[in-house]
Length: 166
Image (cartoon, rainbow, N blue to C red; front, side):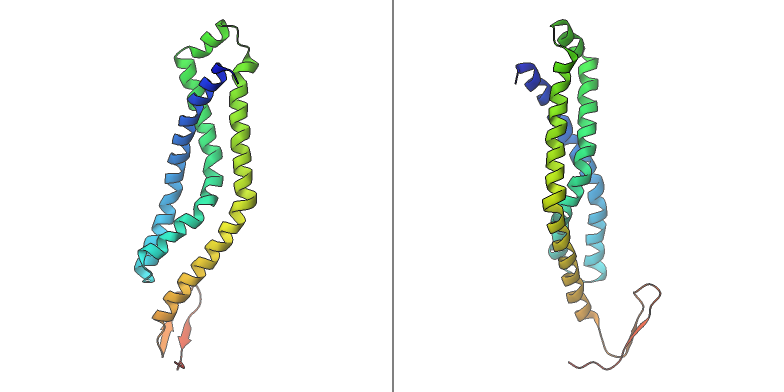
C-alpha cells in the first residue's frame, strides 16, 4: 500500500469513528430511557438494568457502522476537496482509480465487520438480551405480586391475583 493510500485511510478512519460515535450516542438514548424505566418502575437495580446496554451493543453497531462509514467518507472527501488535496493528487499523476481504492478498501473492511457482527455476534447477543430481560422482569414481578390484587399493567388485560401459595 502506498503512502498516498495510507494517508487517505488516515483521513477516513477518524471521521468514521466520529460518525459511529455520534450515531451510536443517538441510538443509546433509547436504551438509557429503558434502563431508567426498569429501575424506577420495576424496582430493578440500576447496575443490573445497565447490562442491557452491553447486550444491545452489537445490534446498535450493525446499524451505526454503515452510517458512520458513509459520514466518514463524505467528510473526508469534502475535506480533501476543500484543501485542494484531490487536485494535488491528480497533478502528481495519481489516477482516479488510485485515489478511490482506499475508500473502496475501507468500505469492504467495514462491510466485512458488519457482516461478521450481523451473522455471528448479533443472534447470540439478541438471545442473551431476551433471556436477560425476561430474568429481570421475572425477578421484579415476583417481588411485586401480592394476593387479592388487580394488575392492569398489561395492555387490554386485567389480571386478578387470588390467594397465593407461598
